Amino acid sequence: MSEKLPSHIESLHDQEIPNEQASHQKLQTHLSEAPDGGMRAWLAVFAQVQVHLIETFLQISAFQVFQAYYEENLLPHTPPSTIAWIGSTQACLILYALVCLPSLATGRLFDLGYFKIPFFAASCILVACTFLTAECTQFWQLFLTQGIGLGMGCGIVFSPAIVIVSHWFSKRRGLALSITAVGSALGSIVFPVAAQNLIPLIGFRWTVRVFGLTLMATMGTANIFLKRRLPPVNVRGGLFNLKAFRNKAYSTYCISATMILLGFYTELTYISVSAVAIGVSKDFSFYVIAIANAASAFGRVSSGLLADKIGALNTMIVFTAITGITTIAWPFAKDKSQLIVIATIHGFSIGAYISLYSVPAVAMGKMEDAGRRVGMFVSLTGIGSIAGPPISGAIYTATGGFVDAGYYSGSIIFGVALLLVARHLHLGRLWGKF
Image (cartoon, rainbow, N blue to C red; front, side, top):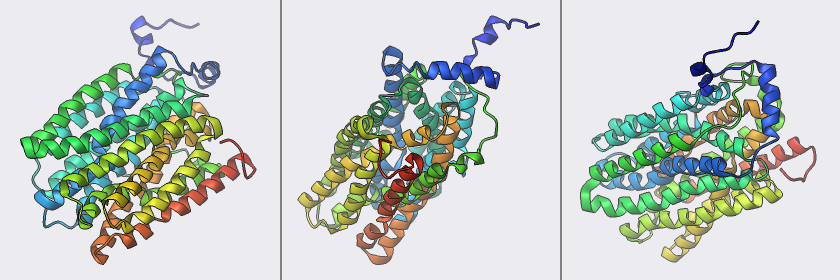
């Protein structure tokens, strides 16, 4: 005999943990009906754009602004490789969940149905740590607030939000995810330019406070509109599903991402510093970052459209190979015009990997376990993200230039080769749409 639950308990959709077999059947029905559009689907995309927009301020793609400011003003006696640990630790806690388990834990909780409360709590952490960053004067304070606090908060909100967009789109998933990633590109344009102009006018503290107020508005929007479509499923296993690595394609894909991320953020982290070194004015060096990220916006949309035609992984292979080549070529730019050309090509190509990396991870298993699988992927691959920029900074400090750092970042090319291997393992042939 079954007893009907009170209505107020039934309404707690995010906290339900249904029977595995029944929910699996229900999931398959919902999955076949992915709308690939409609008001609620595009509102989820819009909400994810807000997450990406703020993630730009929190992640490495905008940390170059703070890297240059900290080197020249706040922390002039601290080596660049040490300062880079602030930004790379943010990426670590967004991507390397084994440190504080944000995205790995929230990915698993998302599969079980717990999304809204962790997302709101992390939003509060992000706002609080942003305002605290404005009060910091020493390296360890910045490391705790901007590095660990902001990174951990962003790690909590990031992975589940990506999976929610995948709930609403199937055939047009590449386009939808690439549009969400445009938010990151827009933020990469707005925040560096805003910081460049606001710091001389109102100072570093009030500039960060303005960013904090912007964060309150965008994360508030995301909390309202970001809603899951598919029901939660109590998939067996804990936070880390080792059986997923029996899939050789998935394992290879994780390894490839680690190799790629070892060099992926090197150019964007240090391009403003290298611009000054070749005679570009300090004022314009900030705009080089904005130019790269403006190009990235076009690259993300273009790669999304192409991904729906030829496959996400195929698109990532082509674009990421170009990223590796431009990273190696970047230190050889001798003047402003050459640097702008390289930054534009690099920005355009880098957008594909940023916007599409979750698509193959989702496709390499069942949708009911997608949150955990994406969480494991970004957790493991963050090893490269945390180690890459500090290693590049150490190479720069030791050699006095970025040429060797560029060669080191050629690890991107090896990662692309592993993407080819992952595609072959998944499809069972050398070429095909994936």
